[in-house]
Image (tube, rainbow, N blue to C red; front, side, top):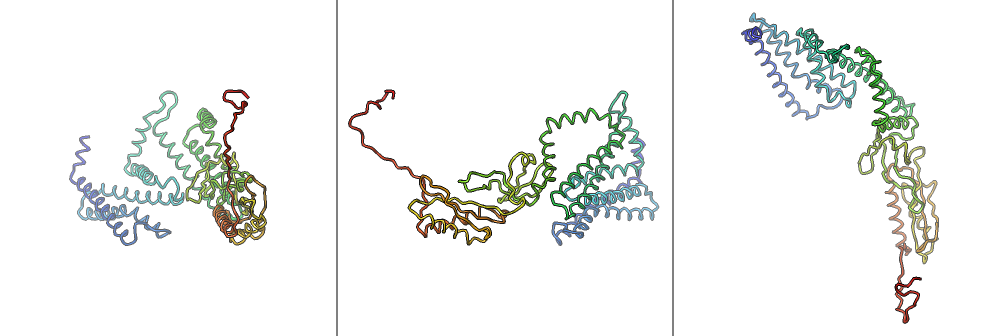
Length: 444
């Protein structure tokens, strides 16, 4: 230890360390100033497309590249002054390695997609890979390996060291990343196959993704030297967990694949989660009415007219009745019940109902609107207006509202009354002689 500090305080070593530190600080300051200048001219966002990617790469690599240039200048100066430059050479190697690692991680993130898990872990992954490369360049790798191999995690007959654990994690991670790239490539090609239905394309891509990731995980564990037969107890425990604690999750995943395969629900469909109500309520209700935005492994995303996105578990769609307004034919029939008084002419009221639906631009002419006198109720005649629309994705209740307003206006102009339920109370005078059959306390 004393010899190490003696070498560290040697003037040539201190000069090199000081030069490397100054180069790093100047590079960070210069990179920050250049970024601020560029953002003032072009805006805070890097931009879109290839030009945006170039700017983003420049933002990432600018401090390292400036450090590399300054260290190269320092080395030239030290050579001219016949000073020792071993530490500067090592710093140059580490800076060049960091450039390559940072660029490689960025390219990998682009290949996996902007929404991949690597987007939030690219800095951590860059540091881990660069530290491993730095240990190899500095010649420390073998000593670290020997030290970690000396730490046994399973004392006894079996031997499982910290180094073997780290190696297994690295191999599994690499294999999973490679299989993720393959799965993403398959997904991109399948999604471009316009001959297949959209739900079929999504199903194939999701299935291939989960299958390849699972296969890559098993291959990675096997390549790391872990005996898969030793995992029998673990897989049995996982099976028991799926049977009890993870039953709902497994059911949602299976239900998601069923929905994708049978094409009953696909992105863009208009659905609602309530059934058909009794005829007197006006036909099919539109509670929880919305558009299918995405089909995910565990749930679907439904966006309603208020802009609220609801995550509906796939199992719910399998076990419950769901109205798909655009499953095979987008045309749907709406029914509007109307009550009129017995003092009004029902034929005139039916004609006005038909007129109220004729002028609406979203109501179909073929089949055209129809009116019916459905029943004679206690306080009026119940009429019904029926009409078809071909675009339920643009809303159903707005058409109901427009027609109801037109009906109310036409009825008021024609003097037709829409009755309300009434009760008549008759006040009888008190009887002169009380009826003994209704005396208080007397059983009847």
